[in-house]
Image (cartoon, rainbow, N blue to C red; front, side, top):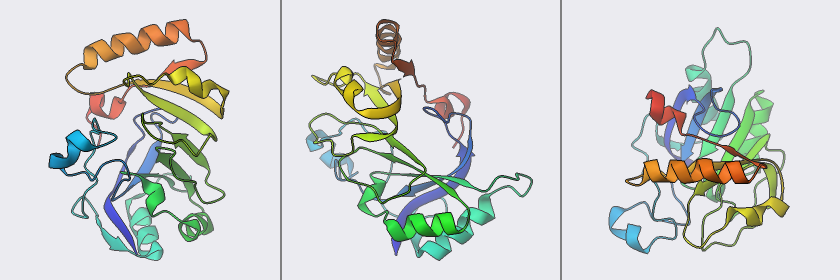
Length: 209
């Protein structure tokens, strides 16, 4: 059984696949923060802006992989000829996501992407891997399709990741009270570092789920 916070149809709002129709599967739990507000100050990733606690979100629950497949099909528009593109996120999806899950998604013709903090190694044959490194962690996953760095992080230089095997590098302004400043800093960063592109949270800008 997989513990799922929510499952919903949307357009990818960040990174390389921005604008792509996707079904998001948000797994509960994270290894960098409990998700409980009283624990935020002690968390490794204390600036997280996502609710990943419990199973009370849209289509949330405790499911078998077959039940998740049925939910994805129920959400996917019938007028789209492509098979579902699913994005597994959290929290940290790799705490729960296993080879059985990946294999069953593929057996049904789905493409599967993950968004991970890179502190856990993934199952095989995931179609798209996006790693978002966090300060004060040990990055184990040093290869993938996309590295997306939330910027700035204290005493944490994104340039150190250029040596790793990723096809795309993105800087994304950290959300919060200093967002305007962080966006300006991000734009200045990519002007000086041509390997990097800007990622904005367009789902927040346009009001997508």
